[in-house]
Image (cartoon, rainbow, N blue to C red; front, side, top):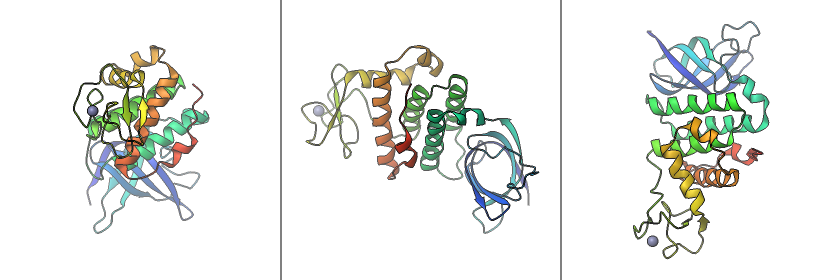
Length: 247
Ligand SMILES: [Zn+2]
C-alpha cells in the first residue's frame, strides 16, 4: 500500500477506544479525510501533540481498501495553535473554523484556496488574540469560495442596485432584498454592514485588522454570514451558541 504524504490541518480529533484517535483532517493534496491514528492517546505516542485542533502538520497515511478511514502512520508539527486555545473567544472561533470546514468542505477534494484561508485566519488570531474580524473574514470567504455568497449590492428579487441603501435578509431569501421586495419576516441589514462585507472582499485581512472596524457591524455581519452558512449547509453550528465576543 503506498504511503501518501501531505501538508494538512487538523479539523477534529476524537478518542477511539483506550489508545487510538479518529482524526478528521484537511489535506492540501487530497482534501478532507478521516483516519485512525493508532496509539495516539498513549503518553509516549509518536504523534505527540500534532493532532490538536487546527494544528498545521505534515502527515503520512495510507488508504485501506474497502474502508472509508485512512490509516495515519506518522505526523510532524509545522505550526501549533494550542496557545490560542487558552483564550475563550479565540477557542470558540477555532471551534467554528473546524465545524464550518467540516460542514462545507467536500470529502476527498483538494482545494488550495480554503486551505490557505484557514491557515491565514488561524495565524491572524494566534498573533492578535482578537478573533472577531478574522472570524467574519473566514465566514465571508468560505461562502464566496463555496459559491454561496449572494450579490451584496443588488436586490435578489428585482435586481435593482441597492449599494446606497440598507438590505433585507430572511431565511428563505437567497440574497439581499430591497425595501420594496422584502418579505414580511425579513430583518434589516444596515448599509454599514453591507459596506463592511464588500470591503472584506477587496482588502487584505491584516489591513482590515488594523482599520479599527466598528465592532457592532463586524458582529452583525458575522451573524448574517453564519445564518447563510447554516442555511446552505442545512445544519445548525453547535459552537455558534458559545460565540459571545468581547472584542
Ligand atoms: Zn427589489
